[in-house]
Structures are given as structure tokens and as C-alpha cells.
Length: 436
Image 1 (cartoon, rainbow, N blue to C red):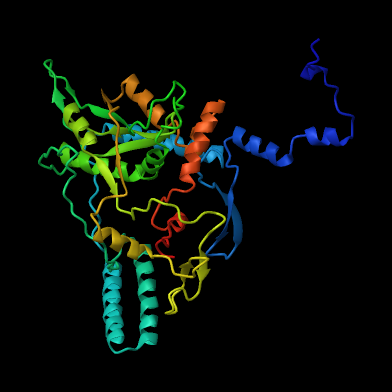
Image 2 (image 1 turned 90 degrees about the vertical axis):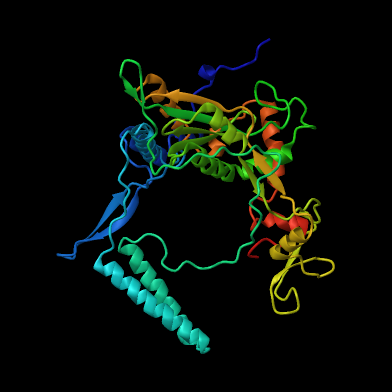
């Protein structure tokens, strides 16, 4: 006997009851839907505007400008259309854009001279030990730097000098050499002339993805979760942005011109990120694939392997951890101070230095040549903008139980894997995060 009740058979709630009130739409949701329907920002920011002549003060609602659909669909859609227009106009550009900086004006030169006088006075005060007056000079320098930025100057006139560890720039022996090409001072690709005299200027659509970590099914889940390399998958995902940055640097070396691009990152079904590039100009496919194969990113972090602490046994913070008045984390049982980030890197230098992780691209590299105005180019632009209004978490759905389990296993590794030198997860290895 079928006892399933159809939604149409459920009686309506009694008028004036709590069930009826709970079924009513919330006023805020109605306002939000109305704003979306008529293309109005759902999270406007009130700003006070003062008329400098009459002194009248008014409040004006300004669109929030969010680029995420989950926050404000209207502003996100407006930003997505703008980015699509920028990609369409810049992808197949035929003339070199004018990017020459404007000459400095008298105000900017005067501010730089004032900054130089304050800097000289600051150094002289430090040499004489007048720290109080030197601190006042430092505040004046910060104020002048702010005035320089407001006057239209970009950059910093006196960037701080930070000591950095210098490592060998020799390429890895297991990576192919990068082809070299003389650089031309241009961002526009080559033009080709056909036999009939037609001139066309092709551009590229490049797709790169990470390496494999184990065999997967059609829905992206591992065939054998026990042998799937979740640790390498997590580390590759963490440093994927740096790997893309290195790829762009290598492309500009092998292309012979200043490669310009529009890119978007999205997750695959197996949760590994991959990227699509709309590249202005054309590069020979063999050269392009060689550059992708030769691209890698080395993570020079301490080679910690064993977890010394967990949630039940964690280091504690001490105001005088080393006996010299310095604060830091100590062992909860012995009270000994944990190794600092610099000490851990010193030990790495003392040993046979090897990177903690080396990220590379997989063999699945797709390259397509496209012409401006073609239907395929327009489809690719829409594909690039598909995920611009979504975060990485929103761009992936896990409808099946196997996909949810795969996501949970990857998240379990990411929860304990350090993602930066300042990540608190270093405490699990007995190392104080950088800046702690």
C-alpha cells in the first residue's frame, strides 16, 4: 500500500496560525528579489555627500560593487559583463595600447623633494640616537607618501629593504630547457597574409591543468581512494596561483613579446583546479607546449613530515618563551620554545637542500587558434566568464555520495596542510609560523 502523500494533498495551514506565518515570504527577501528583477544593487552602501558651496549634507546609496553572485547578483552580473567586454576588446587587439606614463608635475616633484629632506633628517637623528624625534620624522614620511599617492603617483619612492634568502636559479635537471627568443617591445601578436592578400591576426585559447594523482571515474572520484595522492593534490592546489604566474613569465620568454592574457580558474570534477587563457597573439604550438612542460614551482619551506601536536596536545603561548623577553609558542609539557620559522629554514639550508614540494602541470594541454569576431571566439569568452561571479567553493557541486566523500578527504588534508609561511598549521610540526 502506497502511503506517500502528494504535496497537493497536504491541507493548507489554518489562517492566523504559526504555520501560516512561517510560510509567508520574508520582507527582506521580497525586497531583494525586487531589486534583482529591476537591476538594482541588493547591498547599497550609504555615503555622505557634502555640497562644498552650500554646505548641504545628503546621503546617497552607492552600489556595493561586489563581484560574487552570492553577495549581490546585480553588481556581480554588471562586473561580469564588463569583464567580457574587456576580454573581447583586448584579446584580438591590432594596435599597440598607449601605456606611457605622464610626466610628473610641479606638485609631485615638490613632494619628492620634501620626502628627501625628511628622509635625510630621519637618518641623521637615528645616527645621533634621538629616537623620539626620529619617530616623528617617520610619521611625516608616511604622511608625505600618502600625499604622493593622492597626487597620482604610483609606487613607493623609498621601498623598504628586506633581507631575503638567495637560492640557486639553476633549472631542475628533470625539467626540459626553455626555448629562447629575442624580445620585442610589443604586446600585439604577429599578423599573417594569406595567398589572396587577406591579412589576419590569430590569437590563442590555452587550457592547462594539474597532473594526475590516481585513476578516477567519470564523475571525478578516485577508483582507489587509498592510493590516491591527496597530499600532492592539496599542495598543488595551494600553490596553483604561483605556478600560473611562473607560466606567464615563461610564455613571455619564449614568445618574444610581452604576452597579454585574460584567464579564469575553475575546478575540475576531480577537484583539481585548471585554468583557461585567452592569449593575445599566437605562439607555435610546439613551443607553447614545451613552455608548459618546462614550467614548475618549487616551494622552499621547512621539510617537516611528522605531526608532533594535534588538537588535544597543542603548543601554548608564552610571553617570555626563550628567557630573553621574547614571546612565542612553547611545548605544553617541557616548556621549551618551538623552532622559529627562520631557524627551521636555517636547518633546511644546512642539509642537502630540497624543496618541500614541486608543482607542475599535467600532460593535458589544449591549444586552439581563434580569430576575432568568429563564433568560436565569442563562445570562449562566455566560457571564460562562466565562473567569474562564483567562488571556487560555489563553482563545484557534489551531488553524489562518492563526490562528497572525495571532497571530505581532500578537505581533511587541506585542514592540516600549511598554506603559507604564516599558517598556524606549522605548529603541528613544532615550528612557529612566520611572524608569530
